[in-house]
Image (cartoon, rainbow, N blue to C red; front, side, top):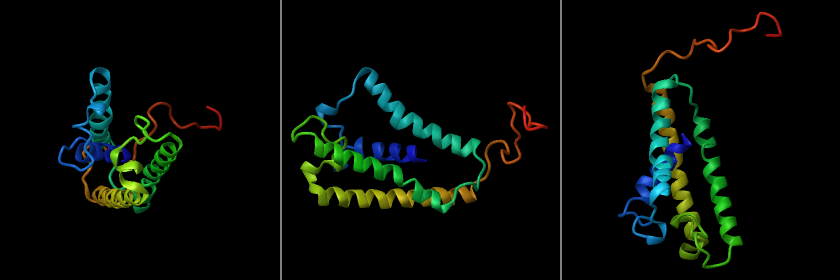
Length: 160
């Protein structure tokens, strides 16, 4: 479900011109050609495909509350990487910080940490909502709980 966070951050924060962190009006971030296609595949198609996969091909009730906390590890590691990378690059380097809400030059460390706490709380709440929805949603696809391995049957002996 992490890719859902990617899609939501892109569409609600980065591509939203009314957001304080919008990247749409910045000519240095304008994407054309293959970069534009790959951007849409990453930020729109992949999150929608993951949500559709979860709704149709995943049996309901498999997500646990601890998963919402585990999903926070990847954004945390990415934040630490982005901050370390930005600290190692010289000031004024192009794309020193990958996103405006991680830009220490513009917001300072206190501002970036405040943004990270806000986004982290929102992501965790979204994760809890997904876990809750997983518990009450109906199964839209085939019943996958009692499915056997269709590639090869279970072995009768230790060797197949």
